[in-house]
Image (cartoon, rainbow, N blue to C red; front, side, top):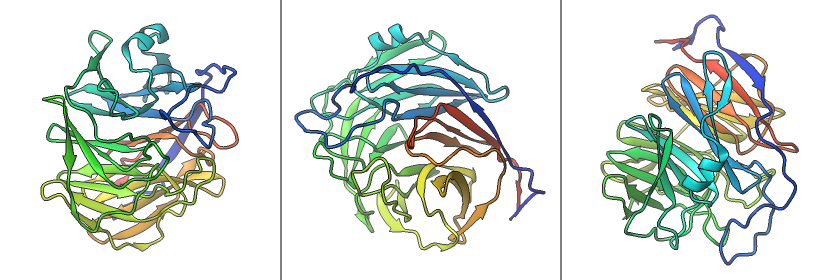
Length: 330
């Protein structure tokens, strides 16, 4: 594998889309004294459909925002009015999204008392529909990752209602609207939250995260695990080379045998490649103006493009970094 002619370049643009509102925001965890304060724009998610990245998240820990980013022009516009969103989406803190059959599924904090913690967005009607299951999740969960496989949305890790990191998996069947407990075996990853994940065929890859409660400067985990979703067997990936050393922000596949991880350290966002067959990491120098060091950003990586939006450090970021990754050959 070689990188063609250093053609990879970040395109960078800032936006002013999230109004600042004074106040402490809303409580996130029921019956728990929260020992920290979230920034007012803590988490957004990105969903890719065609040439658009759909940005969904909560502003000021209360009301949802939904924007559509044109990846050709980097122009951004409100996809759905805030008043309509507040009537359609659960008020719980929005956590993650995934795409299945060109529909966007939106997940909030998973709470056993709330059977309406997932919605689906239909682009043709520009409407959110709540998914009302007839079963409950087994535990509260936030800061998890979600990946869809054969009609099941697999949730891994996160924090429970006592702010303790978890390493369990629960799945939601998007065809029957029922929750399922998933029992796994093998080398199960240590508990974590704020990690990144990506599925390639039958294998789910988990990287990074932290086992600390701190959201401002957590000590990162830098290990990689693979779960075979057919056998539900975990394996820790033995890795070589110069892998990510900071907080992982996004992971995706640029080829079926190659993962890319965006991570944050030493003042800026960096890029690393993981060759799955060789178990080898390589850091890639990408030209252009890079996004600054941050936590909690939303990112997506495909075989064509890498996109990063938002996040926070000492300040909140409302920006996008975009890079064309069609520069690899074998």
